[in-house]
Length: 77
Image (cartoon, rainbow, N blue to C red; front, top):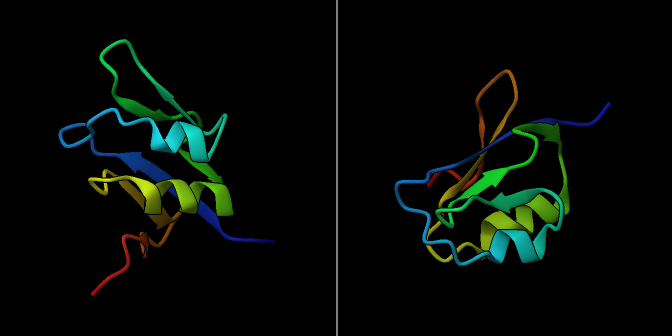
């Protein structure tokens, strides 16, 4: 069984660039205020979601391992 992730978007810093929507079609959506939301906050580990987080110009997407809370992205320094 693979890893499970918790995906969150910090909407206080999200600028609505839609990079996440473009990189991971179906995994994120923008609301009427142009703020991103994960379609499924708890999901299987997925390269497209990681690429979306990495492409966010303000690093508003946070991915952690479900259960342990260990950071996936952004990585710990």
